Length: 321
Ligand SMILES: NC(=O)c1ccc[n+]([C@@H]2O[C@H](COP(=O)([O-])OP(=O)(O)OC[C@H]3O[C@@H](n4cnc5c(N)ncnc54)[C@H](O)[C@@H]3O)[C@@H](O)[C@H]2O)c1
Image (cartoon, rainbow, N blue to C red; front, side):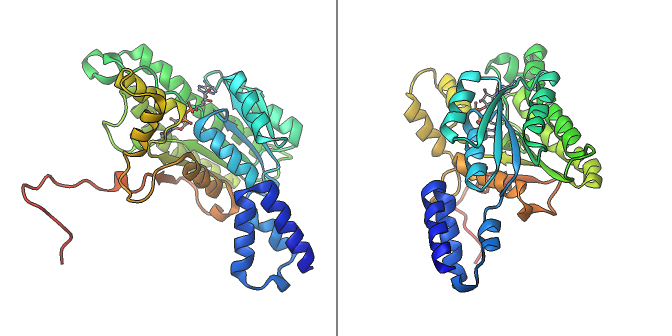
């Protein structure tokens, strides 16, 4: 038995990277390898056997989540993205458990087809992560109320809000249909721009406030079906979306690596930076049975940024003695 566990640990360390390391650490922490059995081994992988679909999974936070889902034992991760080139590349990079399907979340039929393809291929859908999103242009028409461009507003909302809603709708259809295993976890990417005003353009900020609201509204109904609905509000992570946005704001004054370093330096939490994997691990938690009683929640991954605001005191301040 010990031999089998060591072999299993070594196999997972080799093939699963971080998750294999975590499995070995957990086994060591338990300090009782003799009474570990293969059920323990399998249950340590928090998404063992799950079928997941990730919109926007070809890049950034969606792709990082796909990678973590696979490392945590997901049986299949369907990457549904409008960018076919990136989507195919991501699926190839992530290995045989990842599959790409073209999907434009702004078109409901396309979302429905992606969900149907996942169910046709794997028999069910356990996890839906709605990560597809856009920031839209940065201009007076998106950042000044008096000249707000409502067409630009609609364009962002059609992806971020309507697309997310379509994802929730069709995931619900799959998760609650006769023959579905019952239950499921639906996740959405909100943002700190949907917690505080002034962090994003009007279209982006409004779209992210809406997502946290949609999650609560949907959780109210879907709890009766055993389907949990939650969102994650990440801090700034230097994904292509954010690097491009900052580069545009800086008008070429810094190259990509410099922009990424600037974004990493924006945080408040000493000794840590917000990385895509931090958001991906939050997604793993909410997708897993570890969060089996968590629904309607907005999991903020911001190192405390939106939790406080200091007064501009005209003298030095510190914590009360
Ligand atoms: N990176 C951050 O700092 C940050 C912070 C808070 C929230 N978010 C949110 O996280 C999500 C992912 O953003 P990211 O930073 O990974 O950006 P990203 O640009 O790296 O990835 C977004 C992905 O969505 C895809 N996409 C865009 N429009 C689509 C559509 N109509 N249909 C299907 N796919 C589409 C893109 O092709 C891309 O692969 C977004 O909803 C974003 O608003 C990001």
